[in-house]
Length: 415
Image 1 (spheres, helix red, strand yellow):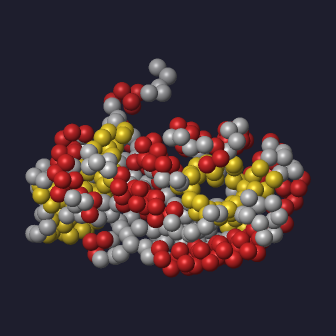
Image 2 (cartoon, helix red, strand yellow; image 1 turned 120 degrees about the horizontal axis):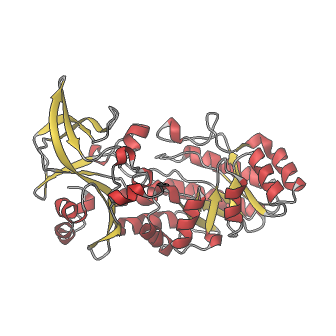
Image 3 (cartoon, one colour; image 1 turned 180 degrees about the vertical axis):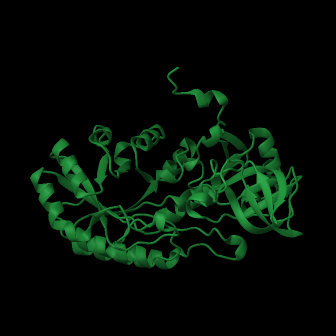
């Protein structure tokens, strides 16, 4: 049985997967508050400096209750849309705690942030000029492509030669010219190398270059080194967690040297998303069918890719546990492909995986689903998005987002 359900015997008794599904419906996202707070503290303690801060990347999971906890733990946040800004403000974040890192947006979207005194980062020279024309004299940050990319899939590598993100590091002169033309105040530089790296070489290389570029500007208030810190999705195979200790040592030394060379206080930020929320969440569903087609055993569940997109989007790996009458099955394995209920051949949750032999009525628990799970969920096939529950520090579950209803599918129509 996984660490998620074995914090204590009482914890498991109160939160048996089958009991949670009976109470809140299937599918269901369940989050563990203790794990969430622990991951926030991991990042807060990564660098011991009063000039170091952590911005949670809201796109990983924007549930209002989770955002409240993250804010309580002392993290700030970054946003990618006016919608994320709105939710962050509702969660109690102050405008100065929010960093709007936009990508190819309209003046109207920029204005949504500017009018709320939220710092905006632009992603190209043309967007910097657009910002300057509309908001001359205002603060602005610029995202830099340092050329150092990393990530678990090419779709999430956000720096280097094959990405849409950032202003190349050889265009600093152009940035300075636009800043001067529109009397802008360049308050920050930021980067992001990609998502889900397990060792920090590319991250540190990008950080070094960003710091060198930052020394060319006299009035910077901060630099944002980005996120992408990985978690182990292969725990059952023996993969350990990302070793933060060496990264902490090297990053601390880099930041200290940077501050010394600057000769003035320039804040250094990071922006983890997945690391904060992935391991605090599981996705629960029901086994509803079995069949053999052309020698392949398919196990059908209610966990379609409308509920969890990572496998179909990134060919991502998630581990799973099978429960029957409250007992986690361990023996009698078979090789199966676990599929969902969406009308697409690609709707495969787990491909050719060795799992305990399943039967109808079993519960499947998909692990490490707290990041890019619900936040990417949809109503495709007019399926209803699941409820979300939080298992609090007292071990008690509580509803933090209700399950969609059929009436929700009708919202917005002009009838």
